[in-house]
Image (cartoon, rainbow, N blue to C red; front, side):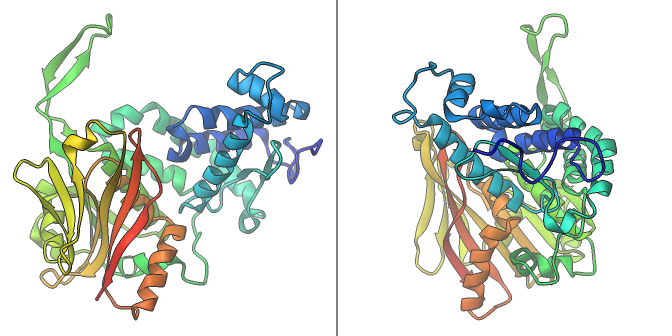
Length: 410
């Protein structure tokens, strides 16, 4: 194992990567969904990075990590208990997924080479010469923006979708210009929206709340319901909102955001529109109804589905089953098409149940996922309009990666 940190020195002199920048990048990564839903992965990555920064590389050995992070006995059998190796392998995968997401291309790299527990720190090739400017941004307003996002997370779910989007976009958009000269899979899907003359419209669900739970400042155990006029945004929808907003920020595309109740047909005739959410978004239901793949439900809404209008095949969710099962499949529709009534490009980002709108947002802002859709589209003759059914496995309430179940191009 290496006795020094490869690719970068930790320090403050010219040409070195400042320790504070590494620590800030670590916190940014750990706040991302690839790490934030787990205790094990953040604990592991934080431990190895801190040990490397402290120069304690002799602590970065499998047995030591097993003892210090996972509480194993000092003489535990590493051959029969691969917890360290398995965790490191999963972290490598999650790090790769993090840097594949739009908005992270120019960020400082933290990585773990296969077979090693010594983290490496380096700037991506394209950003190496400019990392001094990025460092200044990270040390200044960017750091305060990160802190605001962390401190206000619960507040933002209720009060500030535009604020949440803006704060997240500050984090996502430190360094613009991540697009290359060659169109990417993201350009393939989003190009017609980005090239439209008018600012885009993001149509979200913000349902009114009549009551809210208030916590007594002196006695937190004392909680009562109080009247309120706040508007509620689903956390799955919020994830998709921030992803799409981050993409627009990276492209320099202007956009506005409106709730379903405030959105009129006149608005939709004046701008390319992104509809987020399914059964709680009336506009999504109206615009997907004529499509080959569209939503359906029984009168009691305990069964909801996506149906193939040509074959009759259903991708369905049975809510009574889901309430007693922590391992099940969820489905979503993503689409981009020109609507005959509005004359505008419409984009659908909509899932049936928990986690499905979230993975639809992930899919449409990730080059790796979109590359498969682009291949299918080219094989079908590069038609103008696109629709796909996605699925994901939900385990203990957490969605996995999206999978394309079916596509249609016209």
